[in-house]
Length: 62
Image (cartoon, one colour):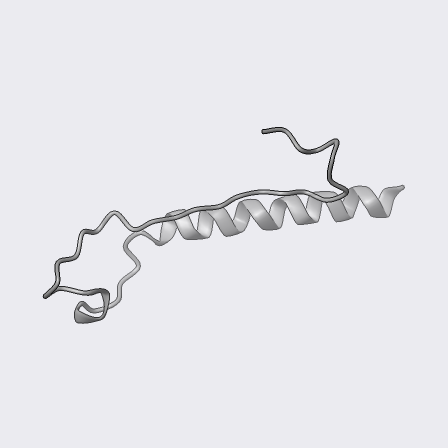
């Protein structure tokens, strides 16, 4: 769906789901935390920040 002509701001949808299956006995809190899977999360955050900075730099140059 292309909404850029209808909205005065950027609209994006980000969905990240863990690919680690958990059973009733094994939940997210039963394991120790690690950095496994963080690449996608940081990648999404970097893409959002880049878009914000690009828009603000373009606005400042006008």
